[in-house]
Every structure is written in C-alpha cells, then in structure tokens.
Length: 439
Image (cartoon, rainbow, N blue to C red; front, side, top):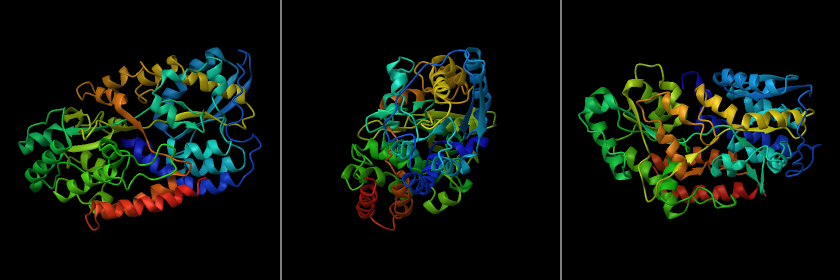
C-alpha cells in the first residue's frame, strides 16, 4: 500500500493483536466508571445547535482527506460541533489507546479492529449502539452480517462497520507471459493453484521469481484455506481451538505442500521479504492478498499488468472478511455528540463519499461501486463478490495470546520440519489453555 503499508489488513491486525497483550492487563485491572460491559445503550439525538468539541482517533493518514470531507458534511447538520482528527501511526496506535483506556481518557470516537474489540467491550470501555439501532438511526442490515458479528460481544453490538476487506489473488500477467504459462480459469481449484504456482516457479527460476507465496499472515493465507477445507480456527463461542480437526489440518497442509513443491519461497525467505514485497518487486506471479493492496499498485508501472482472481476453491468457497469500525467511548464527556458523529459516518451519504474518494471499500451496502473503478481493468469486483461467501476474521477476548502461538508454532509445519498434524495438535492444546484464561 505504499504509504498505507503500516495500516493495512492482516499486518495491522496482527500488530494490533500483539499490542492487546499489554492492554489485557491494563484494561482488565482498572475500574470502569462507566459501568460493566453491555450496560448503557442509551441514545439521545442531539439538537442542531449543540456545542461540543470531539476527538476522533484514527491510524491512517491516507484516509484523512475523506474523513475531513465527511466532517464537513456533518458540520452542515451540526455547525457547532468541532471534530479534531487525531492521527496516530498504527505502530503506536494501540499502545496509546491502552494508556487512554486505563486512565479513562479515551477519544470520544475512535477506530477499532476485530482482534482488539472484545477486550475493550468486555471492560466497559466502549458504548453499545443499542440505542441508535432502537431509534432507527443505525440499521445493521445495511452492513455485512459477518462484520456486525465481528463487533458484537455477549449479544450486544458496539461497533458500526465503516469499511471492509476481503481476500483475492493478485495476478501479474506480465510474469505469466514471460513464463509462457496460460492464465488459469477464474473458476479454479486448490489443485489448479498448486500446479500453476509450481509451473511458474520452474519457468521463472532463472529470474529468481516464484509462482506463488505462503507466509505467516493468517488473514491472507491459512485462515482462508482452513475455511475452504470446511474447518475453523475457533469453535462457535471462541472457547476452544479447532486447529486439531482434520479439515483445519488440511487447510494448513495446503501451504506446506506449496512451499515443498518450490512454488513458493521458503518461510525464511518470506520472513526476510514478505509476499507483498515479492509481488511489488516483480518477483511473484500470484499474490494472495487483501483488497487494501490496491493502494500499493495504483499509479505504478505495474498497475496495467495486474488482474484479480477469486481465491481457489477447496471443499467450499470462502474468504476472510475484516473491517474497521467506529466506536464511541463509554466514558466520553460528549457522548451524545460523539454518537451523532458515529451515526453520520455510518450513513449512506458519508459512506458513499468515502468510496467515491477511493479511501476504502465502504461497509454500507450499495456504496462500493466506486472502488472497482479505481483499477478498472483489474476486476476489483472480485473483492465485493467475495462478501457473499466471507467468514469473519477469527477473534476472541484476547486474540493476541493465541496469535503469538500461531506465529511461534506454525512455521515448523510450513517449512516441513515437523508434521502438520503434530504442530496442529500442539497449537490446539496451547490455544485451549490460553482461551481458558479468558473466562
């Protein structure tokens, strides 16, 4: 994503989840003057002459232009509510939020992601949207049910989805041509992907290029294949790991086989140089990545050579979906005004504006067409169509704990140094212990 790189999908999620390790202790140990999780849900529509100053915390400088355009529209309705946009680079965002959360000084409105959401919701730090929904100010039906589920804790929804990302395969047509390999059908399977990747790697070997790439990014790689194999990462109530199931092991084996065949760089190579970097340097023909990757390609010489394919199908078609949400601090001194801004940003007008300005894929159904026009020849529609078979990013109350276990244990399965089933069982056992501590 060029300048977007620190804030993009899976990497931003993992970094945020790791940051939550510290937040768990800070937030769980502090008293919450605003009440227990799930309380509140109050909502009172503020008058047009309300005076307030709000802090809105975000992590992506590239979206600020569109955000300020949204705020201009908001101020046409509420001219006396001043909104200060506070941009903190993603690498520091969660650390700052932890400190604010522990001292009850959170911003009035701020961005939240899936892995950190339950931690803040469970500790009473963010306000439910129950009141806005009951008043008809926000209608969850306007957003993907998978995204609504991602920001629901203990039966209560707290976050309003503002954008989303799904996963596809970015294809470098130029490398296919150089290798003399025909582009596969878009209705492809795991076997097609494996064979195409191996053939490309063999024919591009002299150039130091590869056909495909694995990696340690669950959102863009092994979560997707686990779902496609009919498996799960967590059980339905996120109390147990599902890694030791046969289907989940098949989803992991996909990447072990890809690397073993030579279709992909090794795990060590991918640690030194990530898959997206291989692709943007012209050394990777097929990159399984998110919709956010568009920003790394638009305006570059490579843009004209790229087309997007849906993920290859396993036993079923599936992709991970994730999206950022806007949440209101339960302890905000300007809570009603913050909710008014939350409602405005969730509406069709603001969401359409976000899409038209190319900031994100907006979450509001029917406002996403502009995204596909930002790379008209790449078939970005693939990412929108994927919503129909998308599954929420796997999360729990302390996602960070078992994300760390994945990072530590899975490389030995992918590099072939340990059998996949052995690693999966070990991971499941350790995950269960970590999940047990969340109760």
